Amino acid sequence: MARTPSKFRQGDVARAVKAVVAAGVEIREVVVDTDGKIRVIAGKPANGAAPWPQNEWDSVYEPDQAAIRASVR
Image (tube, rainbow, N blue to C red; front, side, top):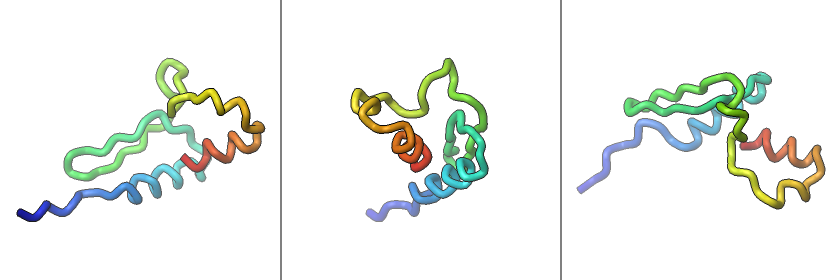
């Protein structure tokens, strides 16, 4: 039985997020609807939470490297 074609790809989401970050907008969340529509919600993360899990090694990076790492995500 063949799988149905996906309505979106991970690369589609990555391109949308990178475009928003390049425009200098903070991302609150990314939502992908069942029909494949990608919505990037602008704003600060809820409750001041980081947009990704923190790691004890994050403090090892110099601030410039941490900024570069955050902008790639």
